[in-house]
Length: 190
Image (cartoon, rainbow, N blue to C red; front, top):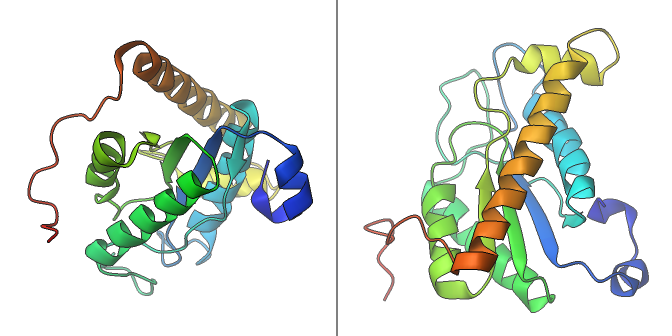
């Protein structure tokens, strides 16, 4: 369920265990509309979150690196890490005990150490997914706009992400939090 379509009373009436937080780029992606990354992340996020019974938060429209394109809204990776950390802590405060971080496009390598940190130190089981890796964004945008494109690509991305998320949370339930290794050198905190 996408958060933007629900009231606070509607949210409180549900008992969501998992929050879904997508990050995407607003900027030049190979000549596509500037909002293509956000459009794809929103569409995939809505479908994936509905299949895993998660509460989908709004897409965060920033990349954590200069993309080298003609235009893009990019922020310092450390700021994006801290923003993700603050959002995860807020999600936990709102009684979620699982979080899915969704990378909508490149430039978000800070989501790896953030996932490890959240699992190891913040008490919220976190899974990181990249459903759009090595995908033709143009074909997905055409499909979403109803002007052709390959619907099977979209369906396969959703099914692959759902499988990964379910397997990762099942692993954590059986074996404790998986941190993917100790967080080393990302950001020293006092």
